[in-house]
Length: 285
Image (cartoon, rainbow, N blue to C red; front, side, top):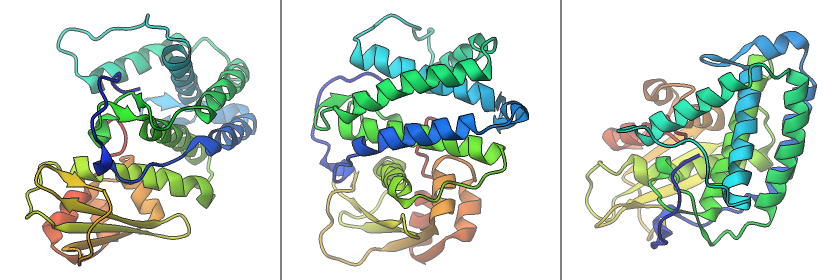
């Protein structure tokens, strides 16, 4: 969850739109297969600090209810900001309240309910208008965000939480490049916001290359007003940062710290720009 939409400014600096819609159904199927394959003891294993696997499943159910209530059904009741509360604090608070309220719900009941509600969410996104305005994506600096970014961000949330469950229960990251490529592409949309306080001459380019079957290249360019992922002019980047896909996705979700990512990175050019790039965060943190 991020902030609600306001108006629809030009957001070409976010780069070419991503269409994550075809992936929601398969991601939901993969999540349900993961949950239904867990042993009873797996549900009590820590998935993220302070939450076990059962808590994380409850959180996913809350995300699904929130999306359907707000964006499909127009339901506006719900928790409100406390005086002086930041967006990040508000989100963490209401997530914790939801999880605590659902600790009386069994893993089997959570799974059955998530199977039903998650399928409705997949259908909602399959018919979404990618060009319409949607809820803000704070880590990309887009408020409002276009629906293409909001929906892609939501896919990364589901995918990331599924990996956390897999890791907690001794499974490796799902290597399917069809989904991972979209996840990484979405994560990289945080680059302009990451560099917002980094000064460089207009036209300076920084390229991030993620290796592996799901990887690619992203070039962010300094303009007069901001850094931009719009198609760059021909030129040589001042800095190139190369990361493998596992390091990149862990960095973007704060599974590792920037200093650790830098030890795995291959850097060419201005190291200060590379260090700034590695401050990227593609989740509410």
